[in-house]
Image (cartoon, rainbow, N blue to C red; front, top):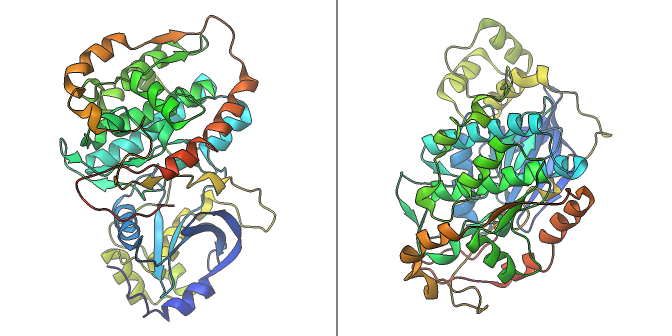
Length: 427
């Protein structure tokens, strides 16, 4: 049960309980702040979203989905506070930044690290799919890394609730991670879409560059549609096989996340979930918990009610943060930047009003999609490089791809869809 936006000793307590340290990242409609929770002296991240008419429905969906997901490898929302101007999502803070920063730092992940982190990502995505939620924007900068180097899937602004086999018609995501059906069909299934994105992410993790590169929107689209990519020779065969399986053009031929979990790459990996994490509370609170909460000005009656009923308020937030405190460092003003400035880079909903780019028209291909799928899959080119891997080249390609001109062309492009969606950027 969510608190009344204007009813809290609410707003007054929010500004008392949390002290902002600095800004971690900005978007068009949101800003991410690092703060510390005064009662527990624990770092948190606060995502502040403006209460605009354009993005209110998207914001509500993200909050509802995040509140329903309790998993060690999914970022946890511990409190939601609304004012007339903004909504504040208080989330656990990932002190090691995001996966994009990690890959930039080391060029590409070593095999053991990639296997461990990839399994954790798969566990998070499978949990979402098991709960009929598709993410639709899985990418390196939406994978945060906590103080124990565990992966945390975040940013559910484009997520949707959908049953297996149900078709989606709203087109969204980040261009280099989009599946071929994004360009060639008016409807698509969310789960295979996520599988493709996870395959692109695995490729990026073990090579340091994205599989589908280009200097323009049209060029990247052609690379994705033909699934023409090369895998460097240093990539192990079991990882190679998983990448190829996940990047099948025909979505019906891609394995499910559950099937991928059974592959040797995953079964043989050493992946350990964090021993404790901010989790949904179940059961009756212990006397020691009630005692600790009383010290932090929460009465036993109020604490018990909030913990058992799972009221998303300052009481539950204090409990969850206190529960997780042993894994965290005390906040300081001199902490290293976590790299969350990339957290929300250019995902968006697209409204199909008409093709502004002749190379990006879905209608001309949709009628031929089914008859061409098998032929395309048979032509798919997957190669291993004959020359050594150039580590210094990859980071430049990645930076170019996330910057102009692809992002700009993606911004200006709109698709015609059968229903009308809010023309807003999700950040």
